[in-house]
Length: 157
Image 1 (cartoon, rainbow, N blue to C red):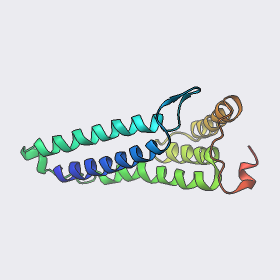
Image 2: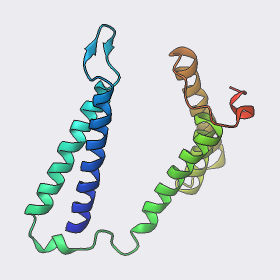
Image 3: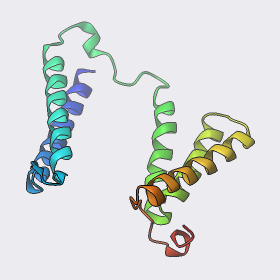
Image 4: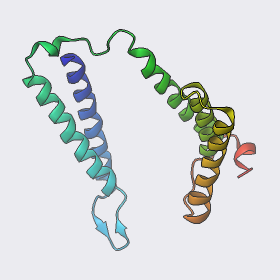
């Protein structure tokens, strides 16, 4: 467990450092129109670096026998993969089809496969939530979401 904590803390520390470095290039101050482009990434990265430092310190100070337990118990990997694989699939689908179709497919797959919900509830949620998100973000707040590379699908919305 201590090795996993060390590895996780180190990876998060490097990631936080990279985000800090990149956000400093974008200006982190407060301009006339509000926060500048690097403001939020900078402060999120500061939090990430602090949390990863806490993880590393705790892993270093933890000398108990529980620290040598395995990171993943037997049979514990399957539920993690059931959550992680559809999430990776949604990222890939978002790149191809755009956010809203990918969200509909992801929600339908996840609710039916993991949640074992009925088809009526699955279809209602997986269609209503992306449509509501489209109207909130694209129409009302005028925030364009990823449309994907296949324009014949993103041209529908």
